[in-house]
Length: 333
Ligand code: NDP
Image (cartoon, rainbow, N blue to C red; front, side, top):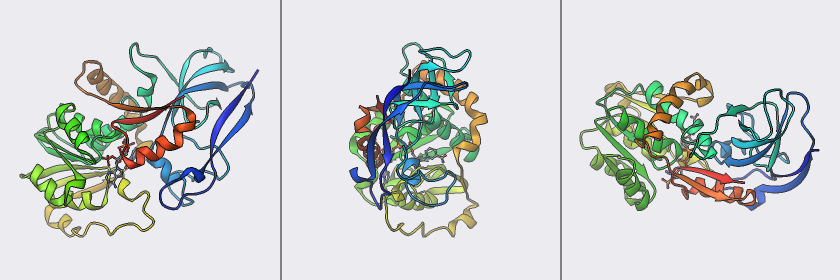
């Protein structure tokens, strides 16, 4: 049978912020699945910060997107035609062929639908971003109860979960930063952060010092730059940083100067440790059990910002990079 699918391709590599010229739409014929393959109709696709990195032609932990080819990324969808014994039409799967209406996949994860829970959750609070929060806080930063934690990008997919895990696991104080007054109110009023600030309101170092007058033990870094410098100033002896991302730099043509206070690592015995979540999927089961439980009983709140329509996926992606999302940004197809 097969289908005609619509896909979004990388038309040109961006320099600075992506624009419409970087994306191209195409209609393609997708054949029926062969043995071991599934034809899937995507229902939700993810837009993630790492995709901006893959648009550049640079060596990294994953190869760059290819010019003229469909973009890739996390998606969930329903099986339309199955070439796999035990997988039936209508089954739900998670795979990496997002940015298109339909996909022929041979690598996928079967999903068990959860009553009353949107499948988009498997791209956010029950998926890769939640695992990133869990591993970053517990394994990379080695958070222990009673410690004070600062999370940047705190109203986003990873940050909102990281801050709440810290709270639920007994942090003495959880501080978050985000880019608007509404997000700051969301952090303290809805997500249970003890303090939060808008990084656009002034010097990040001063804002953090006010929010954490006694200092911090752990910093979950989603932003880099001035936020990392502020955190190094605020960290107490033996403090740790999970270096998760540096979103303040992803669209800059020239990277801003790095932290000017790295000498403090010595006297304070600080540890900064970067990580890539692909290396930590052995922790998925533990994360899903704990975070799933907290979500189910309402102790952990996970917002989503949903944009409708494949045609709006580029705008959703750039909007996420600009901060238009609260919680996980997803596109509903
Ligand atoms: P988010 O849902 O947090 O969306 C990105 C957010 O970044 C925006 O909402 C915006 O919020 C914020 N932002 C954009 N520009 C700036 C800036 N100049 N300064 C401060 N904040 C900014 O995305 P994710 O939760 O998916 O990702 C968060 C971070 O985690 C990223 O750095 C990403 O690269 C990283 N990551 C790393 C992984 C790993 O394996 N190491 C895996 C997954 C994610 P605001 O309104 O607050 O500015």
